[in-house]
Image (cartoon, rainbow, N blue to C red):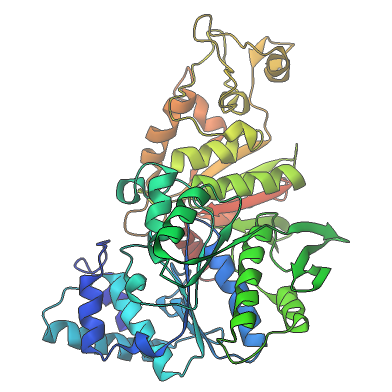
Length: 485
């Protein structure tokens, strides 16, 4: 596919926020975005799930639906869909070439994401979409998708520390960037529990936006089936819901609040009824998000957790469903992600133990021949005493201590295989070790080999000896691992 080479070329494949370039190229293309209706979605985690839920509902209701998301698993075509069908390769090549012709004629230098944004708007207009679900790429205020003037609804999902070098170093700063998609007199939906809710509310108030706060729905398993206890308009009911994890109750609440607003406003000239929603929720899919499968007779969970908050959600799911079970992780990520704190959550004994504290540097025990990773990652519990370098908590000591040898040992319940995948800016195994070993600081350089390994063939590391194999990290890594699967 020609588009793939162009978009990954050195002069396109980079991040450069701003609206002036995308505005110029869209004007030259006749401003196709002005003829479209949008639901605009920003946030740190959960954007893709909200997009998938809304898409499934709208398509089931017979509403012609465009969806623009990122990143992709296997192909750029996945980012631009109409009624759940990706644009074909030939169509993407043609529409990108049209954007590039305008770029050249007007001496505009677009980034990869800006080219895709313009191409998506052109495609959605030409396909006659009734609604477009539009996901931001990074941040919100200066993201190229924010060139749209007045969406039907703005949605802001959970907010956590991410891309701090670009968006700011605090939740408040990041929330303010995400709140850039809030527009005057446009409804904005976010969770009461959102970490940045105060900032979001203040930004919405200052712009005269209409605030709608949502409260997450309960997610529970009934007879092995994932269900949601939902409250939609006058309907309160427990219904099958095909996305796993308690966090999906929050994403579902955001999506259904948006549907309620659309029903009241009549913006789509069609009312979406409860029966349509029930059927959509039972079939919605979002690939590689707590995606449980069986591969070669082994149980495998595939999840694209790419930041600490995503890793926390994964850890909470494991705590609830695989506590004290043997788990084997296969992990790879990009260099610009906070992989140290993702690792902290993955290898911690539970989600609470993975609570982040960048100032914590763990010390080895004087007499230890084996270093207990689960104890080492009991963050914020002062697991190690810097003075005598002994375990302060007797319960932790007893759990880690081999009473026969007097040595501290690995629990044997977790091990991690690192995959150095082929992608620009992918983290190498040595960089990974250099980043995480100071967190656990083993006495001997060889000790990390007991629980950390490198692999060139991730699927070969899947073991039926483990209660669960978890393949996780960058969505680009997952795309490479499963491209021939």
